[in-house]
Length: 345
Ligand code: ADE
Ligand code: ZN
Image (cartoon, rainbow, N blue to C red; front, side, top):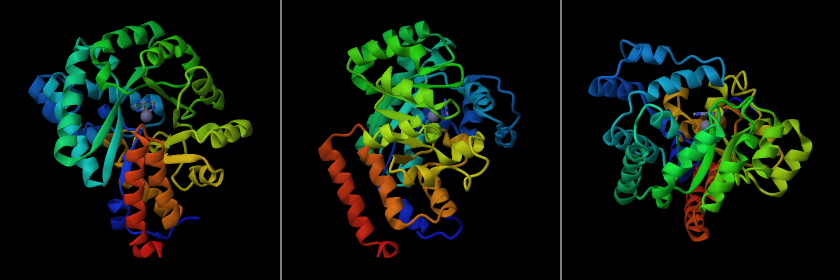
């Protein structure tokens, strides 16, 4: 199951897609990092764009997070967050993305003295502008940094309260091992009581137990990554029976050494088990590809068929927080494009 591409790049780009696992701060391309450092008079430890790109060699999740949080230091004003979000949406639209559910990490900014309102106002303004001009719909996910305390997460949720109309869900990211979902049971309960939905990173580097905890203690309706679920047969059964979406990020998993190579990733096994897999880009500026690049990479690595690619993009809408009517519209568009594609005949 590898080698020969069975679908064209054009076909993958033409399919409507929803992106469900995307960290806005992870879309900060080196050129923008350099420009914002200059504009905001922030010192970064790279002399130029080439040096930034060269630094993007990671050994694991933590080695990436150290670079990612350092990169965040150039984001200061509402305009910066607007431009970051707008630049991402521009690239996403060019890859056929019609709907995005994006994470932001407020604590990596409020800890530097940037007001919560500055961060969310810039992001929200860009999301609304791109829905108006390009028709791309969106949901915003406030992600708690799990290496920090639960009380810090509770304070962040409090700061978010005036902006709840702009936030669909809470998420959990950052250093996974040693920071289990159970550490955040209380703040998730508070978030759910405020009407927010719940997702959580689990089973990226952490064990299957963390996926159980995300489901049972946080009531997460989606698992971000989740690739280590295959180590626990009972968990796989539960995820399959309940159609729990897994937001898998293939290029990220290779860059962070979750798998030694794409060909050695467990995507075929996940598909074999009838799990509701979606393909996403995670932190595309750092991992070398946006969502269609990720789809093309797995299509090539595993010679995925038209039906399998279509299944993955269908899953992206089925797993989203869109209404049933909106989902049905996107699914009909996908089916129409697939019916007319030469590779699907
Ligand atoms: N924050 C940004 N990207 C992340 C990832 N892949 N895992 C955990 N936290 C993150
Ligand atoms: Zn992630």
